[in-house]
Length: 222
Image (cartoon, rainbow, N blue to C red; front, side, top):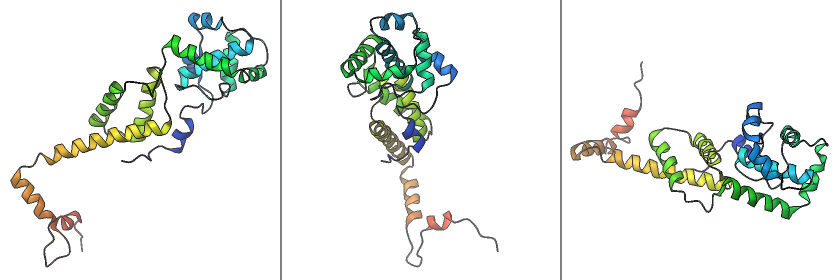
């Protein structure tokens, strides 16, 4: 089972900001609607309000909560600050890091209100079936499949697991799909055809190579 298929770029950007979101992404993931603003109204203080929406929109965009919730691009923090009507420099956000209990309370509130699920407690039947179907129907590179699965989880509000957990799951499903394919292919030849195939692999006593090895080598012009 091959599990070393991620690029360095994929490892770096998994569950993290890898630069500024585009303007389109800002509008899609970081715009605060009336429901968001009503929920954040319960927060007291600028750092608490901005910290809350940073965690909320990060979960929407990345599919996870950051261990340091204010470690976001400045473009994101300013965009959210302006929507909250805050006119201060964003350096006050450091105050949010000093309130660990509030941060965890905010995470739980976001999970419950917006319906986010933890991957570890998830019934994975639908996910596994979806991945298995793609491995069976399409010849996709495992690195591409990893990105597709990540998007699948984000869109369905399933919080991303550790990168190794997702890599192992994809590798296991691909391995199962490949074994099924080889088993199906092996069942196609009849007894006579199997006998003929086997003769291709036999090495005659007067030779060091099987007929299959000889046929694999292309003709040489002299």
